[in-house]
Length: 162
Image 1: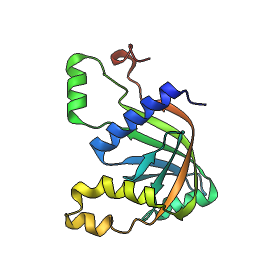
Image 2: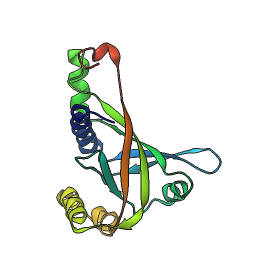
Image 3: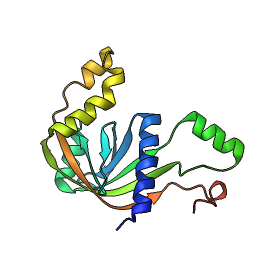
Image 4: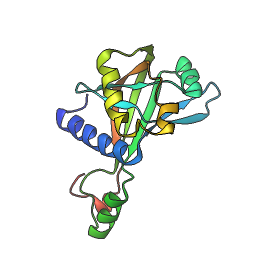
């Protein structure tokens, strides 16, 4: 079980990472034991150590989940300012990223609240042609159950966090 303090920090680090890079990565394994990483820009974390993501274009991920529902979701804060200021100061103000060890559920229709969340996230870019091409057909989600986590660590620059 993840402590409430850790969960709040995970949510904060995850949000900063997705804001900086516009996605997180979901790692799964195929039937031959080969790893596959899928970038997903639509992961949302709930308050109860669960979450969901919109699954629209993920052929390999969907196939892999049919065989094994376990996955690892990694979110890294790739903000140049975060890294530059951390390197200059010689320490991180927060963890640069997190890995979530999860079980991913079956595809299901998104509810009204989930559709509102995705609309709010993509709204700043809805006017772009690319947004209209790739972000206009969100209808289905997969639930995520978070079982464990691991911080991305650089011990010499984060002794105060560890």
